[in-house]
Amino acid sequence: MLISASTGSAFCAGGKDKIRDAVLTEQHRYFDLILAKRYDDLDAILAPEYLGTYRGGVIGKTKESSDLRNFPLAAYKISDERSLVVDKKTVIMSFHLHVKVTVDSKDLFEDDNICCVWHKTGNKWLLVSQAAVKTDTN
Image (tube, rainbow, N blue to C red; front, side, top):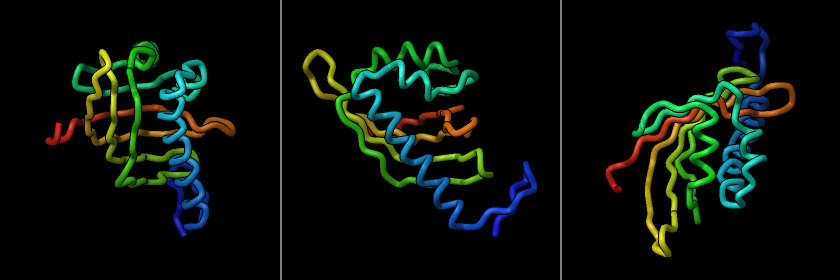
């Protein structure tokens, strides 16, 4: 049994697995929405106080939303998923991301290690923060 530091409530490993699975589903949905160019739905996943940390700097929700509209994602694969369920409303998700982007009819590939923080607000999981580190294979 795990004890939540923030609420003092207990939840069992089975509950932890359900939370982790729900967040992993949202993580895939995030990239699926980029592929489908469903930007309004994508914006709804980003927390109002979203914080992104990338090679180019630290950005907020408005810049992330703008950047995603110009990101030519053609395919992605998530692997090596690891998660830390902090409590019933907060999950840290780390994974390897392989993406294919198409620029000027040319396919390019990139590998990154990603760390995301998800927080549940009401019945909805929101992406609060994301950091990306390019791997040595780029």
